[in-house]
Length: 218
Ligand code: G3P
Image (cartoon, rainbow, N blue to C red; front, side, top):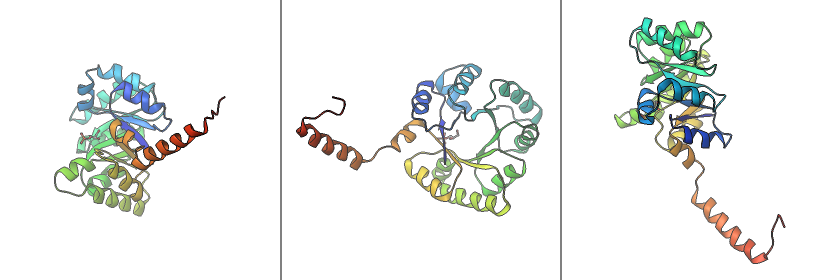
């Protein structure tokens, strides 16, 4: 499963990229606003920190303006992935852009039927929002399972990009279902490394090593 960072914070992206485990980045208008940075400038900077796709979202609601915005965004770098909302105009834009060889991430997906439409529109990625789904009394993971089943039934290439990930269990369940990608806040990605027994194990080994009085490097 690929790991994308769901953030526009440069320091966090650099730190994750240094682990060698970062496969891409997703942003949205809220994350750009939170960063306080200029959209074009920060997106260009992020594109330079990873070879993987960097999702940059259009803000227009109509197809013609979405296309104009996408035109500007895709010039930023080769690894820009245009993010469009799951609306009729969004999917028209998705179809036009993917036919032209541009990567497209269809966002704000809350039903398996919506995911089916996105795949038919040629989406590179579909972003079902599991956290927001859970928040509203639905089962985010059931949504991922349903989309996996449908995509496998018909052999769609669209990658399932689990979004709105709030905790490590979302990541684990997504991997068990066979989602292609998950995007999570840096805090969640970093917490994947943690286990109390790992910490306790290191503590014990180091205490015993100390007793030997040895040094590996001399
Ligand atoms: O980038 C889309 C998605 O991951 C947003 O997550 O936490 O705002 O629901 P959240």
